[in-house]
Image: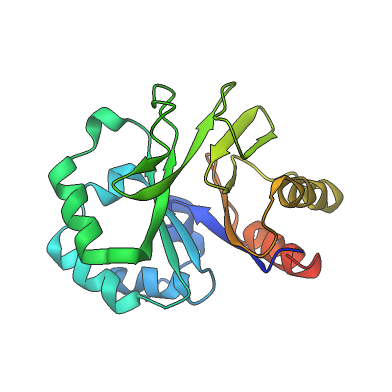
Length: 201
């Protein structure tokens, strides 16, 4: 059994979360702290982290929790500002646990980026070693789950989690599992988190 499967959301600043998840009276700078009260892993959109300022770094560090982990999403490596990324990694340190890459042109040799592990999400290709195929996507590299939608059937959700857990060699790792796609209902994410805990993950 896994020690823990850390369920999280792909882009904690997406519009429907701002409208339906965060309390209306909650200051913008407190949203991340609010999110991390319930979820320990967050996948940060590339458009967001490339725009982080020193003030954002300060606000993030206030929200820091020892057990939390940030993953940076990369959709286009060509748009990654190297000096900004290097500064971000220095400031946030080990809190940035890795990268989740959706750029199909990513080199098969780049399983680590700036010293952090990389999970590659592709349509058909996979690196050697760990990989997990689900719903037309192949994830490989560092173990990490990602799906672009959740089936409404709880049994199929359970099958998805079991499939992902079965792909892992080291069952004692704490592994992130992110839900993305065009629209996310936080009730569904909470139900998935509860289901993972019920299954012992």
